[in-house]
Length: 174
Image (cartoon, rainbow, N blue to C red; front, side, top):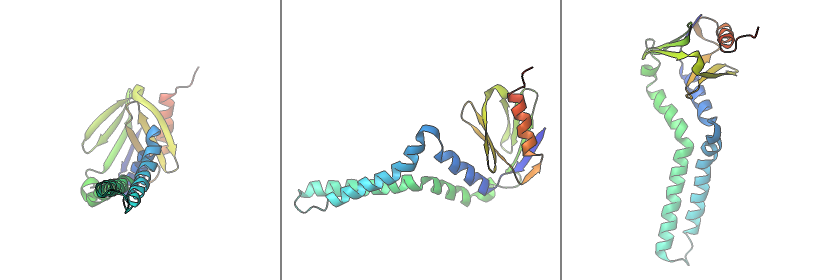
């Protein structure tokens, strides 16, 4: 069974942001770390404006606060900066010849064929299939993610493909 689709920027953005913010134990750090740094930086800048403090101490607090503000803003906006960089190179990344992905269910492995080359993922290395509202993710034991969209397919049916893969991964007991 074979499934072929063309990568789009909206699929990439959705998969990237979903993967970035749902990275297990790092979710809280990725969501709260940047804004928390900005709050601490703001408090340091306010503390550095105290006219009764020693001048060197005021400069250090202000400099540390501004550094925290800028770095916190960078951490908060980092995933969107990454998306902006991909968007700028979308013609190269999503070109017809490089943006086409084929998945084939082989006898012993899932065959992933992209423009960069073919990859064989043995079925024993597939950890789970995560179903989403707009497709699914195949997650391997080494935390690689293979995204499968539910719509805009060139060839194949994603529901039938995922059902067959699920049957291969979880054979019925006799």
